Image (cartoon, rainbow, N blue to C red; front, side, top):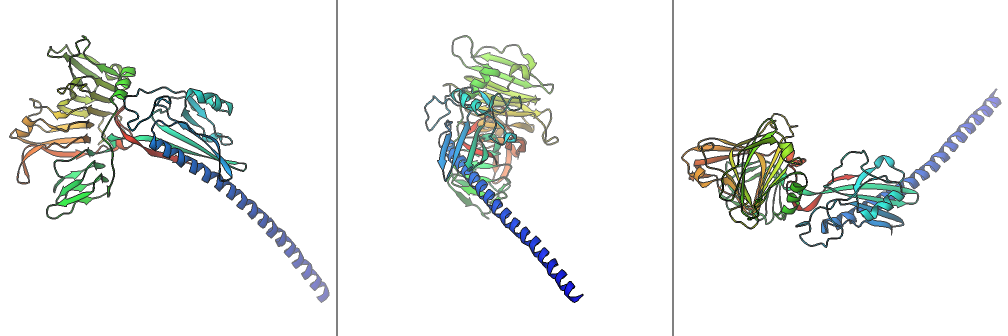
Length: 477
């Protein structure tokens, strides 16, 4: 029995070793295969990412770039980059102010289907000359889901190939929108000081000077650094401070006028005398708007009442060489633009009473009511019987390109002290005082109460001004 037991033991161990040996060999072979696949896919991914970065750099340097790359050899593999740049013409020369004075050029929508990865399909807007090449490798004309896709975004589709593996990287870029700022000033003649609390992102295109202990809830950026004054010199930056950030204060009035012409509303002198025009708007919670106009020194027309969606389907109202007077309760989305067109007395917006939303974001964060006020000159609270002695509410993002935002002087000098309650943002060339003071105590005018509308970080009023430069809003691999 001892000899048989030994033989059985040897056979058992031999079988065991043979089984495990085969398993070890299989694991070794599988590990090599996995390593090889990992190496190939990693190389393809690195090539795609490198090409995406090169393309993004081109777009950052030239907003109109949409050439892309076709089958370029790189690091043992190849890359191809498609650019969807729907709102610029490839035949227009570029400049440091590319985009100014240029009308959008429509480009066809293409549903791009990456080779071997149909689930990663994406709608692109490409030049007409590129359509045939896309169709040749399986793309088709139209949006991928048959809907109307966003066409205000530049999309980079970067495909890196190594061996038999192709990896696709998508990068979406969009002009950073001024509406994302709670406060934005080209320069500041008044200092944020003790007792001041600023909501939302804050930027100044000069040196930021603070006095005492102002509080900044959003991130603060400045072009030329920070100077602290007062006692104690302790500004509070809850979301950080960064210097060296330069964001030119500009916008393309031609683009907004084009949008208003295409599917919005343009108000201008129709007599041929090239006079200025005044337009008053009273928004109604029903979704309608009352409006009246006055040419030059003439009389006001009888008020008309129409649905906002009928007056300006895309929400853009452009008053050429005019001043705007606005109040009411907005139900919908709108941007009102006042341009001066060479007349120094025009291009202003006057708020004549409260401006509120029918569905307020403070109680419903999903509210889709949204207003942009864009003035080439100033935005003012008007001195009248509806504003004197009362708190004033403004729900809007306000943009004053060459001027500032604030009450008329008569309101500041009125003996009463009231509140100006803003939900939104102020973007302006300079800052305007809102009250008279005795020492550090306001005595007349308005105490400033500001709350940033958080919705403006991701959604903005129609065609609200964009910054000059692009930023990456999505990177998908």
